[in-house]
Amino acid sequence: MPVFEQDNSQVWRRRTTKEALARWFGWLLAVAIFVYSWQIISDSTTWFFVWDAPRIANDIWTRATPPRWEYISQLGGPIWDTLNIATLGTIIALFLAVPVAFLAARNTTPSALFIRPIALLIIVSTRSINSLIWALLLIAIIGPGVFAGVIAIAIRSIGFCAKLLYEAIEEIDHTQVEAISATGASRWQVMAYGIVPQILPAFAGIAVFRWDINIRESTVLGLVGAGGIGLQLSASLNVLAWPQVSLILLVILVAVVISEWVSAKVRGAII
Amino acid sequence: MSHRELDDMLGRGWRKPAFVKNATLRWTLTIGFVAYLIAAFMTIEVSWSRVYEGLDRGLAFVLAFTTPDFVSRWSDIWAGLLESIVMTIAASVVGVLISIPIGLGAARNISPAPVYAVCRGIVAVSRALQEIIVAILLVAIFGFGPLAGFLTLSFATIGFLSKLLAEDIEAMDKTQAEAIKASGARWTQWINYGVQPQVMPRLVGLSIYRIDINFRESAILGLVGAGGIGATLNTAFDRYEYDTAAAILILIIGIVMALEYISGVVRARVQ
Image (cartoon, rainbow over all chains, first blue to last red; front, side, top):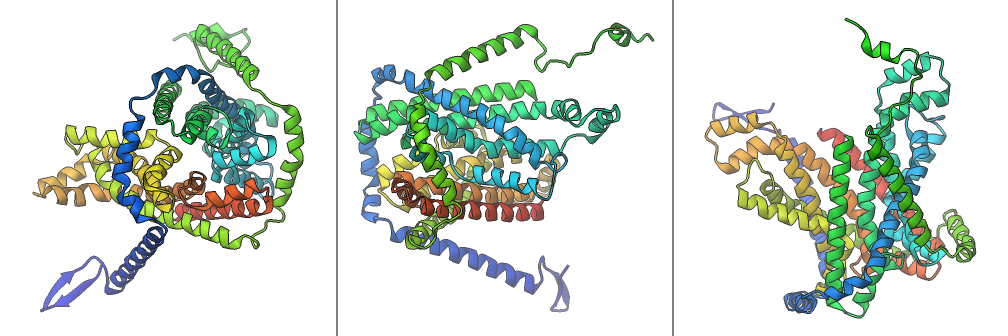
């Protein structure tokens, strides 16, 4: 702890001069980076539009209210599609995530040297790319529609589910596994009776949690043409039908709140 | 003491206990779920001929990952990437700065009821609206460019960080805060010495994690004109330039991996 002599008395300070300088330069650097970033943003902004923003916002608000309630009759199909995209996508993702998770967990992987890195690469690459980008890609490959949305959601969710699942597998109680193997169980029996019961609650929790996120994500997939209520949103935006836009946003909000409620209830019941 | 449980079970085959104990509930859930799945599958229209046609393109895309083309569109890629990074940095800084007071306000144990209600309301709105929808609205209001993206990401950061910070404050150790209060500290001193040291490690960890999320999100904001690499990526897909798209995706994955690694190191150090 640095103590300095000053006027014949000892003064305590939290940091030595060197540490203080290093920190000061760190902060200076951070501020410089932030200012530079802001400079770039500011340079590519048309400030005239920004000064005009309150008027525009007010304008949009008056156009968007009240929502066109009767439009809701046309939203039933898209909502059903959205629900299907989220649910089927989650189910497919879980089927694919389970083997990946077992290959990625340190205690169950067949080869930590070769197979584990591949599983981790699958997890990272599917996780770091947003479902909208996957949807863009799949639309280019298999054409627009609900199917592309399902696959996009599925691919995006693999990494997320597999990551949480393999962490759960790594945290299991090892004594139970040993007890099962001590009875002479085969590798698969150890898996089924020693490991799976321990991770089943985590698995169910992850499934519902991801389903909740997927409902959110599938509401906007339509913006790029992958089905669901986003299609209606993008169509309404394109023709500047603001009353329809506001109704769709309300419906999305309600759907998100309901899915969050369901997911919280189910997770509460499981855990 | 008699072993009633054991006596009852002797001579009877053992069965794995069911995951849901209530039999009626279990069967209702199962049957309902299967019925839903069938209904969902019936309504999804898949044109398998289109999918089959697309397989060549899918293969071309996968192959493009072996020959990513960083060079021919490098200036576009670099401009988009720089914009994404800049948006991420600026939005993370501003978002964290704003979310600290809101997080303090949203913690039930340190803020009065009206402040709590307002802050929780802000958090709820920010969490319920997805980035891409916020971006659409902000682009309509502020015009195209990274400013809309920056505001979107800041707004999303507030919801995420304030909520988790508030939960952390609510779970803090009360005695430490009380000790500071007993020494006659003012409110600011109480926050600074009683509360802040307890939540700082988690705040730093969450902020770093949020940078990671913000970068991932910034990659899609370009789709709706809010700046960043998304616009470049979308153009690459539209023109079927899979090698360029692959290069962009590899860059995104690489940066996300680097950020995840950094955030892992930082979180390990502060905790």
